[in-house]
Image 1 (tube, rainbow, N blue to C red):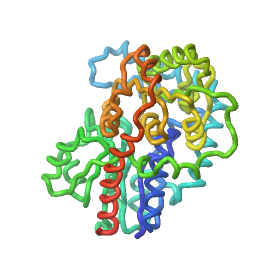
Image 2: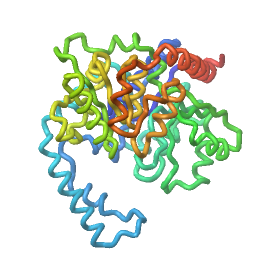
Image 3: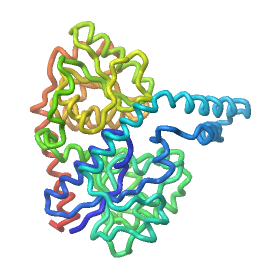
Image 4: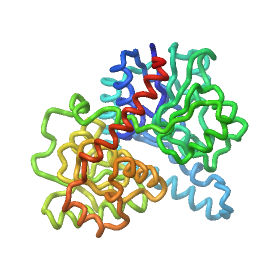
Length: 392
């Protein structure tokens, strides 16, 4: 069977590219021919250019958010957006280096179709496949797709007789302009809908009126085991000394992670290396950061003595690679982390303050128990893919 995957495979986020890689590799191991539908919409792609348009970001920040902000406040927001964008030019060379690392990984390991910039381009010349899979990642999160769910990620292209499913879809239907009736109509075309988190499971069942099979499955990165990632990890040594690694997403919790890392560094004498991967987000208090792509991220995670993170995929790889880790969950998306840790029986690794992290590192997580619990989930996820792709 020829399968086309559509996801955020092109973004400069290690978790995003690695989840696409993992799903692709798992499907190939099942005997399928797999391609990645190279959809790169302008609204998403322009976030990763080395020289961003400050006028665009100024207007975006000044836009009416429905929060009752005065004209003066919106003007201030827009001015800040303009100035912050101009200030980001100082990272030009680091951003270019990051683009090369991600681009090389993408071209080497993901079998991409031609580039599609718009949904209309996809509709006019869709890749010919037997099955389309949307997911994983936050494809059904309107906040990431300009306030309206993107029809491309709802698989609104291709011949009507082509089967459509999702795998471990991330969902956030809050504050979107897509109407419920529009969503009902689009979801009715799916043969099965797999979610990554259970939070929106009841909503999906209500919207599909129980006519579409629904499932909750593991993030694709867990479809591969630690040893499976060895083929994608650089062979050269990137660091000579032992270290603590931090991997964070922007949020108030980011500062707490860095504070916790500083405390652990003081206690152990190990240096802290930040691999957030985004030069524009590198914290000034964490000067020892590295510009990494997915391959380098895997190396740093594998070889770290300790990991501190606030992100979902930082947590996922800490669990999968058997690291001694602690999580201070992201204030907006932390529920994804805690649900994952509950599935692995490692809920105690999530804390709320830097001080709580130090006692955690005195004892390794129970990875043997976590592996047993996740293996059951992995088999359920594999069975879902087998059933939907092979009818078994």
